[in-house]
Image (cartoon, rainbow, N blue to C red; front, side, top):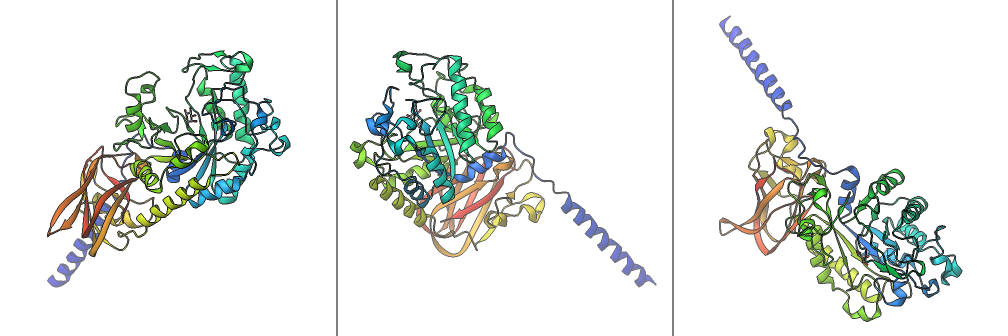
Length: 487
Ligand code: FUL
């Protein structure tokens, strides 16, 4: 009888323990977001990482960078125009989208706008029947790239520029572009306003109040209404911000967050602010690094020997994508209407460098362990950083703002790059981290960084090691790391 009772007692205890541990497992609450967080359209944009800019207009034929606005449409006459050559090259180079200057500051329109005569319809190109916006957007669909537009707010041709009527004109053109060329993924609002121009023959300087003249809020709502998936770029967003320079780098410390009311023309250190973002920024407005493959934005034959080398492009990649920003690389077509051979060579060889550097991810198949993980729940275990699933992540307990991940290859491997991604859907967190390698029976620090964000790639001097350790030493809140790769 006694044995029987003990036996029942033991079952009862076991059942209680099981129930408690199951309910404890169930109690591991998901991490809370650290505000602000990205929108769905911004998340989709982050994943593009790198895309092309195309500057092409009458400037291509006059040799200017900023046309005055009095250029004759008759000079626009590419002799071997082939948008598919542009887009195929861009795609082969690993870029994921194209943004085209549908209208630059000179006001000449590359499409058949019904609101102006200053366009391709009065050029000899295809007897005035051509439409470069259509040709490029069609080529993008064909090669599976996304398509975006640049429509310069400043218009040195338009007689009504600086009056309210011009804003109506600008918005009408924006509607044409958003409506007639399929899905638009990004709209690029340039901030330049040089003042003087042709302005329908007035040939004068026109100053506008940048803050009020364009009434941006209402222009933005047109984009949201017609192209809800499109992100909008301008120096200050709303969706994507300028990185503060045209030299091809975002700050090593790069917060996706910034307070838009701190971004106004004339503010001291604005470029530094744009370059780094603000840790306590009130909005999610990530940086885009716009830079040209040549010294100019438009094609000039005198710059044929000054095309960036593949090595230099690789460096730009590390300073933009490698720091959690996007790279917007400008490649200007020449007077034939083709990407020049030198640019094509550089682009394709740059792609080879990227493919070689990031060919084999040594973390796949390695043993990954963390010094702690959220509630000891498998849902947040370290293995999620190598599962190839962007929706899973390693997480620590609330308030645990530091942690280490060890990646053990099981044998010596040559390591040159470490790539880390935060689960930014719940906000950007990490403020400080370092990377160590196991050598001579001890850990040795080989690299360190501050922010991670969507993606961070650290170059380490190529080193032979059997395991590496990533130590996150400071963060806004608990850690959420979705991906780690080692090359
Ligand atoms: C600047 C413009 O003034 C340049 O011409 C170029 O379009 C560049 C991308 O943006 O603000």
